[in-house]
Image 1: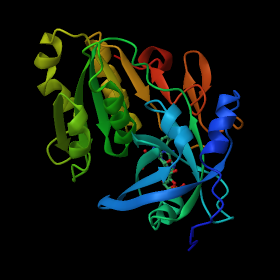
Image 2 (image 1 turned 60 degrees about the horizontal axis):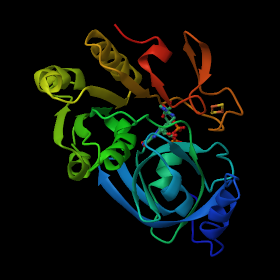
Image 3 (image 1 turned 180 degrees about the vertical axis):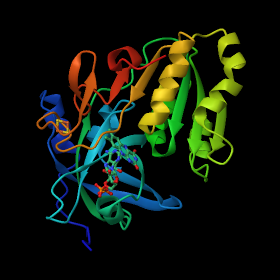
Image 4 (image 1 turned 90 degrees about the horizontal axis):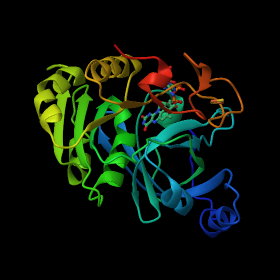
Length: 278
Ligand SMILES: Cc1cc2nc3c(=O)[nH]c(=O)nc-3n(C[C@H](O)[C@H](O)[C@H](O)COP(=O)(O)OP(=O)(O)OC[C@H]3O[C@@H](n4cnc5c(N)ncnc54)[C@H](O)[C@@H]3O)c2cc1C
Ligand code: FES
């Protein structure tokens, strides 16, 4: 197993910020792991020190993490879940070799990072933002909640999260949400939950906007639910990626406008762009 031991030559910080000030996007760099912990069964939180990501990331953008194992060349993409000062939090589930390696990180380790990448959610409207997340689709919605919380225009945040079993993100979204709803697989799914709060949503003074991220079948069902009610929805897609920035075609999705790259044209798409809906 690779060790990811601390390399005392971090490039993160002033170099990246100077590059950004000069109008250049910083490239791959080595960040320090500030904290790493287990949130639940196979679910981990990783905090890295990256002033550039912390100051520029917008909800649903993602970062590439690179393995220290030279045979694992492709980076792994993760949505940013939280920003605190110059520290950036990611939340991920162990599903394969890359995430297994990352689960062994300890504070003081080093990890190579690129980003932020991709197009973010559009949060320009004054609205009641309904954040609909399934499983490990929740992290970008947590950052959306953080960005919307206490906004001067009075926009509201309602979270609607579906979990396999452990409700690992309810306490993480609570400080930023006006309403917190969640359901586990045993009891139903997020569409059942949307049905149960439909009266609240349609009767509220602010127009609803759905932001969603999770497994594709879940997002298709959410898109259909939204379209049937005339509610605009933005969906952050997950696709297997190669480069993460538009240089290969590993991540394409078929849409009415042709094949689009999830990493560069997305990951956020509207229901209309995808041709999803009722
Ligand atoms: C824009 C974006 C944001 C993401 N944000 C998060 C996040 O915040 N938290 C999180 O836990 N995961 C997130 N993912 C998924 C994460 O990138 C993959 O789980 C990870 O790359 C798997 O790496 P691995 O080496 O552990 O697994 P691998 O050995 O590469 O694959 C193991 C299994 O996971 C599946 N898988 C791999 N990559 C993906 C993917 N991109 N989408 C769906 N299934 C995949 C494979 O089909 C395979 O069954 C995101 C993916 C994208 C595209
Ligand atoms: S991952 Fe390479 S183009 Fe999208």
